[in-house]
Length: 484
Image (tube, rainbow, N blue to C red; front, side, top):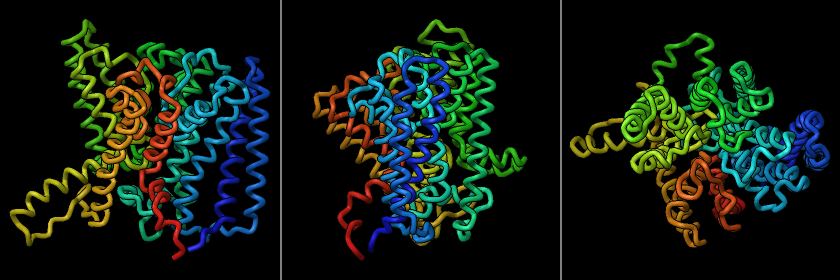
């Protein structure tokens, strides 16, 4: 099977033009603050724009309807890589992150909404570049919505087919004609929630610049902050506002859409949302009680810190309100486990996703019953509806490969003289697109001390996790490149 390179070129060109437009949006901020980021941003925008225009010209005769499955796998993976290659230019040209490896790591951490950083002093970075850093996460979050609606179900990524069935205006048998309409609705919702959060953060006491940046990175479940000590820099009111929007960002955007349409029965009957909510509240209660026991915090602070960190980790946002590794070893283990949970399918959150855990546990329980009743037909049911067996197999394969990739990643990183705890934390948080981990990449540390090869490995894991494993791993298969 031949690849449709004109289509691929046209799509990549469009993405680079989008990159250039968002870089230009940072120019007024750079001019206003006059901190040295103006010229690098203009040069970067010019390079990205010219490259994007050139790629669009190469694909001027392309027909987007001709995008095949193999083209889809290739363009999705290349899209994130190409955007990161050009997106790191402002850091390199400005000299704020002169080493290309570090700049690429910071950028792909942004686009994949991971939030892992190599910057030791964030507050010294020019504000124009900080806005660009936040925008990379917001662009990545927006891209994930489109992937969830249009691309991943088309590629057969397990779990996403379930999301498609819930998307407003979409039914599995009429997916293609409604993609543009659905993506537009979800984008508008994404933009609207971002603006609303920014306004509320400003009213609560943030500067306009800080409010805008944190709204961008919250809705993307990215976690980049403009402050060295992240959200711990701000007061309780701001922390509660961010908790609410982190939770919303980790919820399927289709359910939020249904909520705005007052179709609340679709929310209460959605099993993934119910499990996601109850699990978050249960873990928050456990951590709150633990903090009252092991610290001298009052009830309000214990609840607030517990709620903030639990929501931040489950939704893979990665904001930090306290150094949770100093609380108790039991809580550190619990938070490490949360790195493998993830938010809802159809959200901007990374990780395994709640729906896959539900399928795994339900299928495992049914397997026990099948041993007693081998002739019985017992399908896995989600929200009262039986799901196809091929989706169950896909989900089980995803989780198995996820664990395998995690173990291989830990082994490789440990071979680079990274201590065991740090290797575990760095690989788990990169693959889950969370941000903070344990060891030397904990909530008050960063990834600047990682070896060069380790940063490339972790960048690859970020991409793997963000694009649901199969999308990238498929490209490593020799069969993928065969003409058939």
